[in-house]
Length: 196
Image 1 (spheres, rainbow, N blue to C red):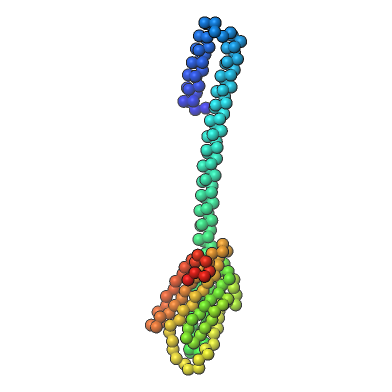
Image 2 (image 1 turned 90 degrees about the horizontal axis):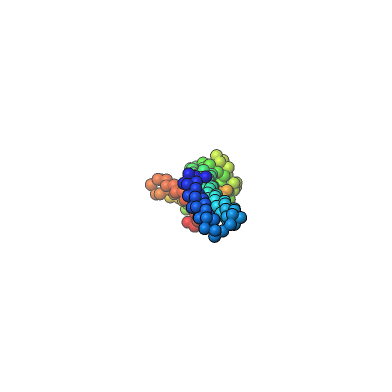
């Protein structure tokens, strides 16, 4: 019991005892009634202290539950951030007659349902990769044959890779090359698979 609570209880007890003594002195109540009132006073004080302690415990439990939920949410977000896969595409040409596109998971979590879309005037691919699940550090390669027999260089292309993490979130990695042969890489978390 805190010191200020003890002081309040002591003052209330003193006031109550003084009032009882005055009532007995003026013959308003008997000694038996005074004893009954004293027992009732003690019970009321104990009940009030118990109710206050219960309310304090309930408040502390609510605060602890709130803190635990915030910590759990933060842990989930941290785990999601740590476990994100990053499927990095790369492209190489063999004498302009063959395109080799490789896809490697350089992230920290497995990539699921991996699919690619390759746009190039002489090479084209759309659909799931031969391995649709890429564990961390694993890669897969596509080898595309050129359909056009005229050997001309065309530097511009776009490779879009879409995949999910273990939490069901979709991601997109876009690799583009401009007419000057400069590569540009863009990584993005999607709201849903169809987002672009």
